[in-house]
Image (cartoon, rainbow, N blue to C red; front, top):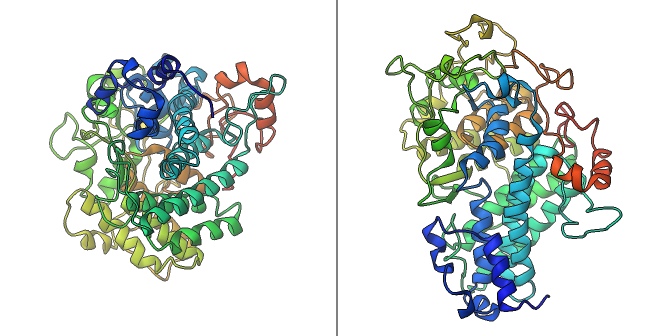
Length: 526
C-alpha cells in the first residue's frame, strides 16, 4: 500500500470526492492539515466517503446535463420508457439511431471517473483490515459496472489500473466481466454474511445512502443482483446462470422482499432528482408511446404515479414514439411529462426480485418457488410501492390488452390494432400458456414495475424481446442498425479509442460483429 503524505492525500480526496453541494459531506470541507490518513481510517471516512460518492454517481446526482447524456438520451429512450420532444442536432441523434459519439462517451466517463475510481480506492484502503468495507465496495462496483458492460459489452474491470505502455489497459470481454462480477458478488456476500452471523458492529451508517448501514439489506440486494445477472446470461450460458442463480436463491438471508423498504434507491438529498430538471426545467423528457399503450390499455393505476396528463386535460395521456420526424420542440412538448420524483434514484425494486424468481421457476431453477405466485407477488410489491390498493383485482384481469397507439400530431407514427409490434398479452397468469407466453407476461409486468430505471429495462428487452416495443419510424444509422432488430449496444467510447486504441481493437474482436449499435452483446442471443 502506498504511504500518502497529508497534502497529497487531500488533493486526491478533493479531486475524487467533490461534494460541497450536499449536506452529507459538508464536514469534509475542513482544514486538511487537521487530519492524517490514520485519523480518517479510524472513523472509516477513508473508505466510507469514496463509497458514498460511488453510490451518488451510479447516476450522476449533481449534474443534470451529464445525467441526461449518461442515461436519459440512451437507455431511458431505448427501453421504451421515455422520449424527448426536442429535435437535438437537427433531429439526427440517438433517438433515431443517428448515434452521437460525444453523447455516448458520457456513461463510460461517469462510471470510470466516479464509480470505478472511488470503489477501487476504497478497496485499496480497506483490504485485509476493514473487510466489511472491502465487501461493500465489491457490491457497489458490480452494480455500477454491470450497467456499463450492458451498454457497451467489453469493459476494463479485472485489469483496471494495469497500464502497459505498449499494449494499453486490457479490456475484459463481456463474458469475462460477468464471471468477475459473480466472483466479486460471491465474495462480498460471504464476507458481510460472516459479519452478520457473528453480530459484529455494522459500520456503514454514516456513508450508506441506500440502507442506512444495514448489512443484512446489502446482502439481500447483492443476492438479488446476483440473480439478475444470472438471468441475464441464462440464454447464452445456462449452466453458469443456473449455478449463480441457485446460489442466490438458496442464500439464508434471501432476496429483496418488502416494498418499498427493500428497494435499492440512493438518497441524493438535498439535490433534486435529475429527471425533474430534464422534464420540467428543460422540457426535454416526455412519456413514451409504448408506456401510453401498455398503461392506458391495461387501465393501470400506476399511470398517474408515473406520468402527468397532457395539456388537453385530466386523464388524457399521450406519449411520443421514438425515432419520428420532429421539426420543432413545440410539436410534442405538450405531451405527458413525467410525474415528479422524490430525492431518491431508484436502481432496483422489490418487485424485480419476485419477477426474477418467477422466471427462475419457469427455468426450473431450485429454490425459485412457484412462477405464478412470484408473478402475482411482483405485481403486489409494485402496487405497494405506490400505496395502490387492489393489486389482486389488476392481477386477475383477463381482458385488458395494450392499446393501439395514435399520434394526434402525425398519423405516420400510429400503431394500429393488429400491428405485429402491438402486444396482445393480458395480465392474468394462465398456467396453460406456452413458456414463451409466460415469459412475455413476466417481463412485461417487470418492465412496468421497474420504471424509470432504463438501463435494466433496455437490457431485459434486448435479452427477451419483451415487452413488445415500437420500432423507429426514421432510421439514421446508415444501415448499421436494422429497425426491426432495434439498437443493441453503444459503440466503444472515443475516450478509449483515442487513448487506448490497441486494447480497444482487441476488445472489439470479442464482439459478434463490428463496433456499432447493431451488434448484439454476448448475452444477447435473441
